[in-house]
Image 1: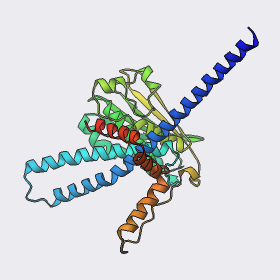
Image 2 (image 1 turned 60 degrees about the horizontal axis):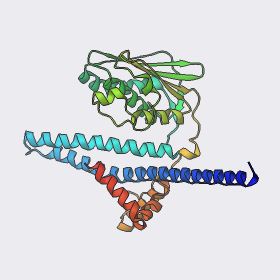
Image 3 (image 1 turned 180 degrees about the horizontal axis):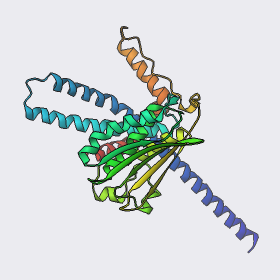
Image 4 (image 1 turned 60 degrees about the vertical axis):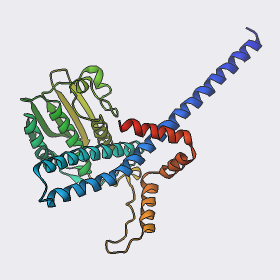
Length: 325
């Protein structure tokens, strides 16, 4: 092989590497754009959904002249608005976790009372599903954490266990501790998880084959959120399962005293005027602008890109129409 051929091969190789790098950069840019879009849409949807539920509650509480049929219709609307609000909140939380901007309120957390509350809150759903839900605890030292986030983690794990356990089954929640960590286990006697599904279990939007086959409601976000919360606390989460032999989720959270939240987890509060202050339209717009700038960096740039890029606007519109089918 002469020097001309070697030079030609080297140039071809360099060209291929350049194209691959450019393609990877485009994919990363698209992925960032997708995350920004999800965060923006979720944020903008949450406020009107909260308003819808609030007015529905007012109508149902004060609508003495509503017929029984109309009241049932409103309950259906409220139930579906609640489901949509939970989905939007989950999407927003996932986007914040990906951006490293989850907010935490660090304090000393007593796990046994917190888990007890979560189990009690899940009892009506367990009774409706015909599933026995029990809680037991050994010794447990306080840990450093955010009680609201840990409760969200527990709610996801317990509700999943109830959903995937047939009537007559059992769900057992256990709290224990080791010298260096607190341990939470959620065990069920449900359908179990296939080995090939376990590898993707904590990925966003992933649903197991059995969940799809049995048409069990869910978005595939709960476990990815659970993992994000656990890892933000410096802990770990794992699963042991076999098809038709139940599932055990094990969470380990490090013991220790509360520490200040990491800089990436601190998000400034939205600047709001005092309750008795007169708020004009410009002040409201300024607060919304501050909210976007502080909590969703890149949101305004993303909106401007939509206005200036017809192709991108077309893509977003197609996405919207597809989601509304």
